[in-house]
Amino acid sequence: MKFKQIYLVGISLCVFLLIMDFLYFFGESSIGNGRFFYALVIISLSMAWLQFWLDFFKEGKKQKEIEEKFTEFVRAIVKFISKRKILFAIFGFFERAFKKMTLGCRECDDCAIFETYYLCPESKCPKGMRIGPCGGSRVDGRCEVFEKRYCLWEKVYWRAKNRKQLEKLEYIINPRDWGLYETSSWANYFLSLDHSAKTIDISGKDN
Ligand code: SF4
Image 1 (tube, rainbow, N blue to C red):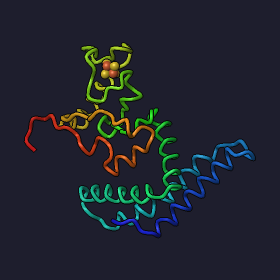
Image 2: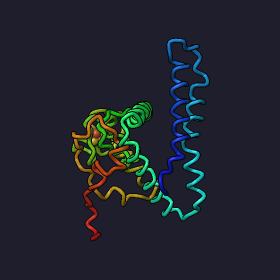
Image 3: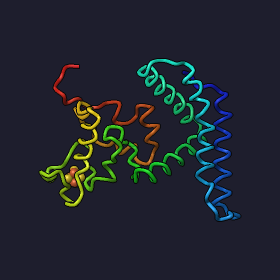
Image 4: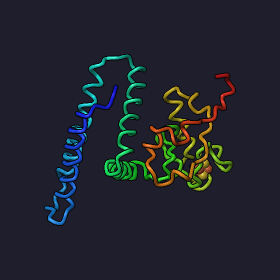
């Protein structure tokens, strides 16, 4: 699926509505009532995404093929946006706001949450361990530093086990690339600039 120029109409409308929404509710002449702020954010984002989804489902392909095509498609969008300064700045602004609110993002931007079941090792582990539990983790699964909390990697294990995906833990997440600090982790992922492009298999199985 290719990125069509026509999609820019929906994206522009979405950006326009978002800017108006922010100005209306948080600008100097704001009316101070944010009840409809989130509703307008959802409507704006839907306007941008609906057109992709409609085209996407029209194709009616099998699940795996759809996933691959979707990734390919998002990659094409990110590539397109990353070459346009203003668009990329707006993209980065919303990415940061979203990740800070939902994940407590620390902007390492060589993001590991795709591998850690959306548990961020940078903000949820006091040592920022991204290759597994540290040597101080306790036998009952709790954290060495905060004994009332479970170790981040204990929770990653539960999530993988509940989804019957333990084999997904059979690799090492490469050390963070500090060169990517405070860039865009989404762009880094989709443009294969981060660690995910070169994971280290430790399953012992031949590929
Ligand atoms: S026990 Fe787990 S959460 Fe606590 S510091 Fe070690 S790796 Fe991080």
